[in-house]
Image (tube, rainbow, N blue to C red; front, side, top):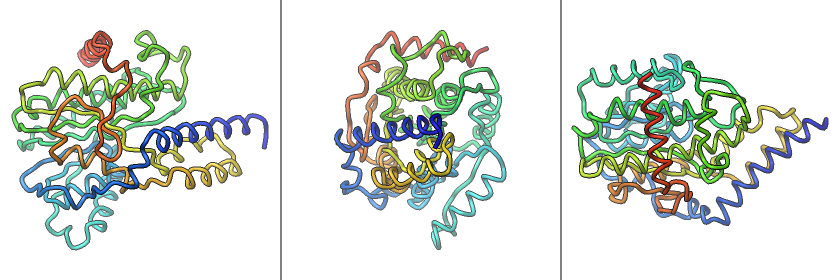
Amino acid sequence: MGYLNFLALAGALMSVGLMFLNDRIGGYASAWLSDFSATQMPDLHGKVALVTGGNTGIGKVTAVELARKGAHVIFTVRDEEKGVNALASMKEMLGEEAIVAKLDYGILELSSLESVRSFADWFLAKEIPLHMAILNAGVMACPYTTTEDGFEMQFGVNHLGHFYLFKLLEAKLKESAPARVLSVSSLAHYHPYEGGIRFDALRSPDGYSEWGAYGQSKLANVLFAFEAAERLKGTGVSVNALHPGAIATDLGRHLEKKLPESGKKVLKAVVDTLLSMTPDQGALTQLYVATMPAGAQTGLYFRPVGRTETPSELVFNETLRKQLWDISEGFIAD
């Protein structure tokens, strides 16, 4: 293994180690010990749920389990083929219950503000309520690239695309109250760039770090949730953020890209040993917050499974929260 490949593997293993320490020593092992299961969710007939990124991973499980309980679930995909394939797979997962399940998909590319507008128009044209908006889709630790609108990809997809979607559907959520908005973040929000959000570099590669940018975008998810919760007080719409847990499938998919085959095998062995959380387990926290009584509270940060925790101290910086909100509104108005 060459020196550069060794460094890539070392970096990947360090990332796994940090997540392991946070998850196990920090108390997230409770995800494996929780008494909560999807079967405990209440009957959801008459409810409408939106799940972004619903064709894979925890988003897919979330969509299926909400539909199993009777909700009309609309999940988003990036193209028609992914939608057709996901719908067929979901029906297999539901078995006989697929006959009565209400599952639809819509095309949404969060890296394009035009696509976000188009999806919102499509959704609103259905003239149905919206009781649960689960902002689940995202990208993780990718090399520097930009969205269609010129924003750093992780900020643009993980935060700005979802922020714009929320703004376009905000009136519908209020009209449908009681309603819930879930911003799916990560424990990575504790580790953004120094100072939190690099407002002067959201459209620049200067000083770019794949993990710093990921942490920044996940911090933005929590800042958004807490600021939205404050602004929507009294409307019947609760807004919360959550960390779903360290899920081996998603983690490995992003970390192994730079590694040679030998490195991928080592990484897979470590991930499978330390971070064995499945998508079924990873979906539990957002299912809990979306449907159980605790989720009716607002302005909270949840971790597996359905337990509240204090987020980064940066989240309580009202100036930072307002600055992110204001600059995001400016970006979507351009």
